[in-house]
Structure formats: structure tokens, C-alpha cells
Image (tube, rainbow, N blue to C red; front, side, top):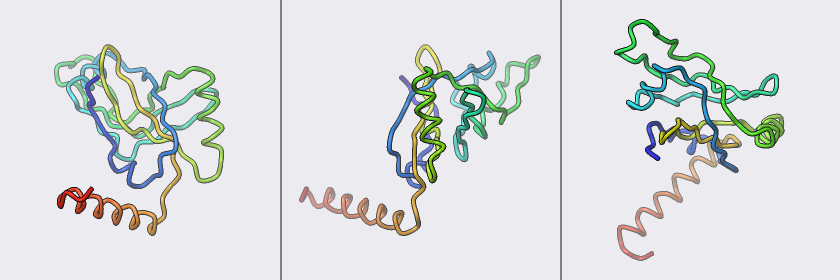
Length: 145
């Protein structure tokens, strides 16, 4: 599957504990725009309400060749999950400090969203993460790994 959008900031700001793949309900022009790679997941999140999951604040740019059917760039989009996965996500999201974040969007035959259940990192955790990454990079450069 081809990755069309990635939320790299999410892996830095959140400690990802578990990942789930979900389908997404899109209109025709939205699907074509996704296949063209006009998607931005920065600042996007997932909410669960009335037994359904929704992707909020994700930007899908309007498809330039769809003059008759323009769509809203930041509308709520329903996610397609199995009932067991949805219950598990909803239960984890209810716990204090946990949130559901879209990590990546990829396209094969269908457009799919990779969701992560994460806990927000504190500033000290982020600094530690940067330190570990720098050490790993230096070890790789010197060949002492």
C-alpha cells in the first residue's frame, strides 16, 4: 500500500501504545484527492460518539476536476471499524491521558487510516526521546552499533 499522508509529529508528541487500521468513508472527489496525495493529518484526532468513530480536523484538499461536487476540507469523516475494535478504542479513549490519533493514511484498493492509541509526552520525555535518537544516529555514523 502507498502511504499518502503521515502524521510524523504525532509519534513525537505521543507515546503510541497500540495501532489499529480503519477504513474511512469518503465521497468520490475526496477519494480522488486522497489518491493524488492532497491530505494533511496535522492536528487531526479521532472521537467516538453514538457508537461510531469520526476523524476530525483532517484536511483533504478539494479535487480540482470536481467542479460540481466540491467538499468541505475539514469535515468530520466516519471511520469504519469492527465492533470489537471500536469498543476497545472507546474504552481506551475514556481513560485519563489517552487519545486516539491518526498516524498515517494509505491507499491500495481502499483508503485506510492507521490509528494509534497514545498518551501525551511531557517535555522531559520529549527531550529524552531526542537524546536517544541523537545517540543512535552517532553510533550509526561511527559504525559502532
